[in-house]
Amino acid sequence: MKNVVGGTHHYSLRKRSDTRRNFGRELHGGLLGGGWRGGALRGTDPNGPAALGGQRDADQRPDRNVDGRSEVAYQDHRREEAVWELFTSECVYFLDQLMVLKQVFLVSLANLQENDCLQDVDPWKLFANLNELCLVSFGFLTSFLRVIKQSWDIPVTAASPELADLLVKGFKDSICHCQQKYCLNYSTTTFYVDSLKHREDFKAYVKWCESHPDCRRLQLKDLQVAPLQRLTRYPLLLRNICKRSSSEEQSRAVEELEGKVKWLDNYHNIQRLKECLIWPQVWERNKRGFVPENLKHLLKVATLDNLITHRNMLFEGKVSVIEQSKVREVHLFLFEEFLLITKVKRNKKWGWSKNVDCLAGGWEGELQDGCTFMVLDQPISLDRLQLRNVDQLNATASGLPNTFVILHLNRYQQCVGVYILQAGSETLKKCWMSEIEGAVAALQRQDSQQPRVRYSAQWLESSQI
Image 1 (cartoon, one colour):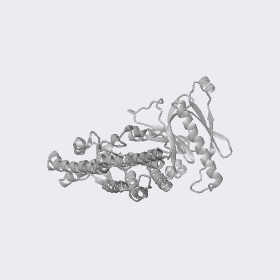
Image 2 (tube, rainbow, N blue to C red; image 1 turned 90 degrees about the vertical axis):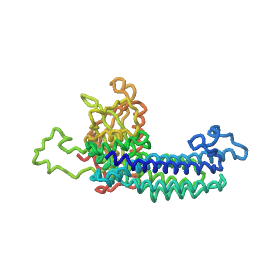
Image 3 (cartoon, rainbow, N blue to C red; image 1 turned 30 degrees about the vertical axis):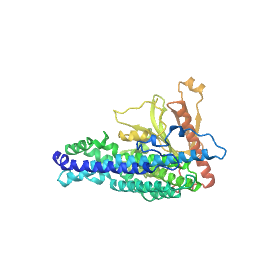
Image 4 (cartoon, rainbow, N blue to C red; image 1 turned 90 degrees about the horizontal axis):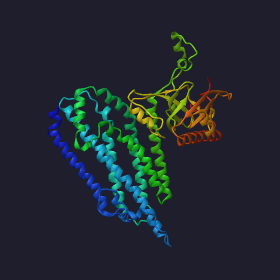
């Protein structure tokens, strides 16, 4: 197999890599060679920050002239910087991640399978719609470059509707669609790679590909997760362009697009989380009750796996719950209509310090370590939740700093659950309380405008116990 991979195919990979680098130089050179009229891109240095504005003094806000021209030039400069950041980051994503994953890994696998090696490995399960991602990103970049070149002939004060049209069309019609397809297949990909790790031929294939110079010490898993990481960055880049746009119409279009990308990102996160949530049975929650084995099938109600499918996750993070004899580490997931308190079941090699001030994104690292989330008791509906702050005096007296209390009420306003939660810092505690209070207030406003109908799909009566 080494001869197949390392022979003539290695030459073809070098040739493809040269083509990829030439395309990168063409993209950068084509843009930098013309220069931007607004002065945001001058010179011919393709290496980034030095090309953004010539002198670094331009980053400082200029004094406003009598006619306001300095202010206009400054705003144009900032807008062009935001557009340039989206373009260059897309270049890096396409050239150094997508094309490396395709040319080094996917093409190598196809070559091996043509020579009767790794015949049972499914390329779709490994790479999903990678070819489509490459084509879409390439088409977006070439269209982006064309719009930028056309803007050289437009005065800096004029609006650029072509850019807004390009972003809306590119994301709505192609990027969001193919990204969603890849995201839905990502969890299958990770499990499939894990199932192949014990095979010597597959390990040799991965090791050879990862040693290729174009990988730059990146592993297969690092390249496979790149589209997901890129998806999470799109809203930030689009918001940056929106804030600096001089046209209200463009701002509305980009805001709408940002919302769609955010929805897709949230949808992907929810799908990943749903696969790792464990909902305990009623006899597991009520330890005092006894249910014979032959009667348990009568108590198995409909699964709650789809409870979070069409929900928006507002906030998540790690805290500790204070119990009678111990302190248990838990992970909270705040949705638009309810709060989930889960216990993390992690690998023995993985640990966590409660002093880590992590506001968001922590659960993604836990998923990569093969962790699951066991739901404690039941979801707490936000219209059945009361929040209590533990002030500094009481916290010091009880020896429990950075704590707050969540009360779970039933429909008769009777308290059926108390959770004393301890955050890693005072800042994190205030952040959690602010997020929960905001979510409760938003739900109350929504119910006052359009009450939820009982027994409908949106009705949540989690306190009926």
